Amino acid sequence: QLQLVESGGGLVQPGGSLRLSCAASGFTLDDYVIGWFRQAPGKEREGVSCISVNSGSTNYADSVKGRFTISRDNARNTVYLQMNSLKYEETAVYYCAARRFRLASCPPDGMNYWGKGTLVTVSS
Image 1 (cartoon, rainbow, N blue to C red):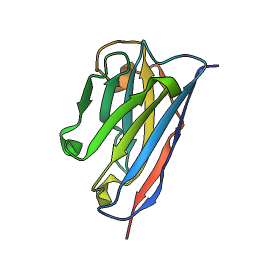
Image 2: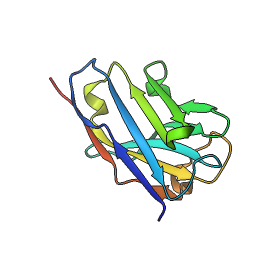
Image 3: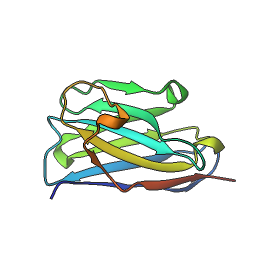
């Protein structure tokens, strides 16, 4: 069946880096847009980044521009989120989600498939 599985979360120090992975199975991501979202304790879910797998076009939330990089490895059917200079307030469960679309557009209510999330804890 169609699945998205996140991995790579864990404990990281403020200012540190972490790379998250979103692996798809049951379908290929070529015709999809993949978004990364996060939900911090007591806060609403927010979009972090978005990529059109086919074209490689990307979008980022203003809060992460210059620090986070989204990328894809088509051979591995996987999308990554490289997170640098992490901050305390970025502690959250990070989710990847997919939408059958070709543009780098990831509306939270329009994503069709969701992973279960991976926890990122930024703490000293």
